[in-house]
Structure formats: structure tokens, C-alpha cells
Amino acid sequence: MVEVVTYRDGETKLTGHVYRPVGAVRASVAIFPTIMNPTPAVVTKAEALAKAGYLAFICDFYGRNPHNFAEAQTLASDLRQQATVYRQRLAAGLATVRKLAPDLPQAAIGFCMGGQAVLELARDSANLVLAASFHGLLNTDLPAQPGAVKARILVCHGDADELVPREQVIQFWEEMDHSGANWHFHSYSGVKHGFTNPNAPPNSDMVAYEPSADRQSWSALLGLLDEVLS
Image (cartoon, rainbow, N blue to C red; front, side, top):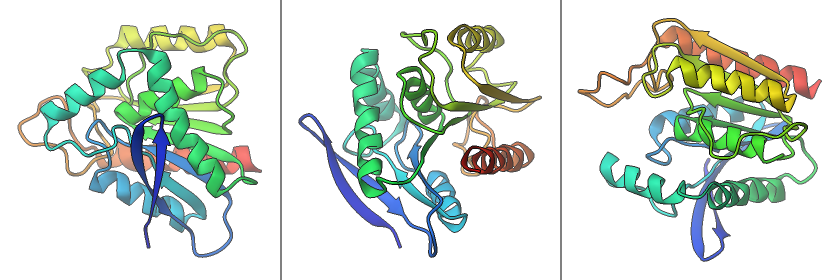
């Protein structure tokens, strides 16, 4: 059963959704959704984490759900105008999760814009055991400085993702190396943006579900969570 939790970033009221496991909780996982805020595909991932023994919390980017993609683009653009403001909004979600499970290790995962979000948190020295990005954007206005990244990093990327060209991938690798981060980068050939979402929007040549990449990336997440929590 989902629980609704309200929290705030300054004057902005936000709404998170909690999915709890039946038995013992291994760790908490903050989930940052797509540019559309929570979607059925993201909810499915939260439910899967709860079944695997994790407290999963879907964070809120905007304080409301956009009615369409154009509105989502406007909301996202406004939020991301200043990296420090963006990171403050993301940190509010992490802080809320930590209150729900104060004594447990904390991880964060994200999809598309949410993938960018977890990498922004890692760059900002968030105290996470793992930050995992699925078809996330890799660019940033504030690259990680040496020693800043505390979290293990997992990036699962479609090599045919037109939103993240290969030059951006290489820049990200170089940034992570410069920062001294401990990072894994999984790239899936021929795979486009949004590969974990079976409900990909119609009439979009840039976004496509890819079942194998979805399965393999999820397996990579669970395996690395096992490793960092052992």
C-alpha cells in the first residue's frame, strides 16, 4: 500500500509516495522520476524495490504533476535554471526519506531527468551508498570537484540516446575520473532514451522501450546494491 507524505522546499509544498517492504528493510531508496513526475513505469520500479526489501520513496520535482509534456518542459526548465536551486529541491527529497528511515543506508535512483537528478546529488557530496541513473542526462553546470563524490555511481545508458550524445558521455567519464569517483557505466548498443518505460510516448523517434536493457540495467542495480550493503 502506498503512503503519501508531504514535505517542503522553502515555500513549495511537495508530495512524496512511500512503498514499504513487508519484512525487514535493507535500506531506503529515493526515486527521482522523469520530467513528467511520477509515471506508472516509475511506480512499478518503486513496487519492485519494496518487494526486494527496500523502503522506496518517489520524490516530487514540482509540487504538482504536469498535464502534458510541454508543461513539464517549462516546469523543468524553471527548476533547473540554477544548479544550486535545483540541488536544494532534490536534497529536500533526500532529507524526507532520511526522516522515514534515519538508521538505514540510503541510495538514490532516477530515470531520465531523475537520472540527472541523482548525479547532481552525488556531485554535491550527498551521503549516499549508491546513486544510479537510468537513461539520465549527464550534463551539469557544476561538475564534481576532486573528492566530492561519496556515493558509488551506476549509469545505465542507451548508446543510441540522442539526448545524450557520445561526446557528453566522454565528458562525464572524464569528470568522474577527475573527481575520483567510484563509477560503473553500462552502455547498451542501439538502445534509445527511455528504455525502461514500456509506456513510451507514441510518435517519438527518440524514445523507445527496450526489454533486454530494462532487465539488465535493473539486475545491475540490484547487484550493486547487494555489494554496497554487504
